[in-house]
Length: 360
Image (cartoon, rainbow, N blue to C red; front, side, top):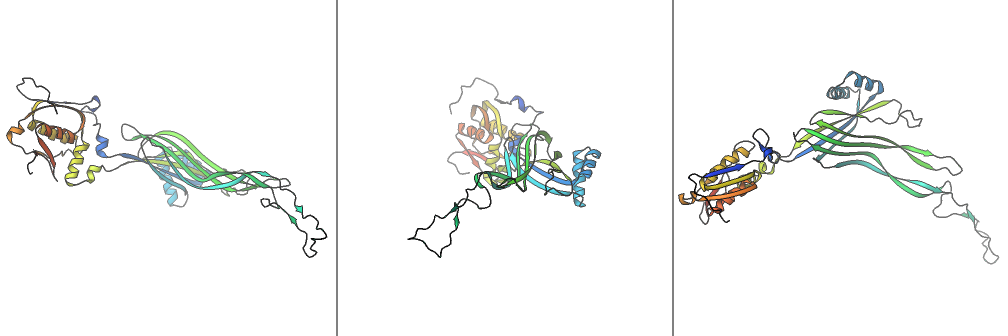
């Protein structure tokens, strides 16, 4: 790298510039990177209980958290049933879909069957007196009803669609959610001279958009099957389904926390990013010491990196001028080493700067 011309300065200057968003009283921009990626885990539960008990629960207990606690108590005591339990994880801003379904194919259009055709009369030469005369029908026709000519497929079961967006505070989540439950409850037979059967479906669906805090249960709404529709499959007891959801934020362990030894040292240094770095006529020893202190500042545990300069005095005093933007600390260390004809040697517990060609 070509050095910038230096001015006659009595002392070395080391300048570090931060973006406005990284002031001392605000979190570092790369804090999430050091903590590892964050995923949202959404759990949806549907409890059912008699309609009078549901009405009393919603009126007497105004808090979602207390309602949920009471439902868990009723579940343990056998006074409520857990009808659905769905858990789905996804990244912030990423739409995810859960499906637990059967595909039901059924006829939607029919035609009348053609009347049966009788065998033509036998001639005198080919008549077989012992063979009975029987009616014939087309291979795709049924003798007792209409013939299907068109079909559709319906998903029967549970479908959950979610799209969470984690807010800047790391705890508030904006959530778009759609939950649908479809049931096949039987078949309905139409009247007429050629009766046909068509499937009967029940659908319960909730679509909403809310802002929530992680780890707290929220009342989504009622998700009850239809009641009082006069069908033979109607439930004997009128029960109300109460749907709750809870969003938990799952922080994945960063890769550099799993790596050990020299590879772990490199990964940690690579994860520490410096928005802007400027050395003006600074010695290599000063630059290395500055980067060591900066590693403590950028380290989530404030332990920093053990950066060791193992070079003769003439190389340690080498003056360098360097300007870098948005650079990992590991790369900044390599730039400094190159300007002084040094190399960076990762070890199990340190990053060693030494002359090229020499043994550590």
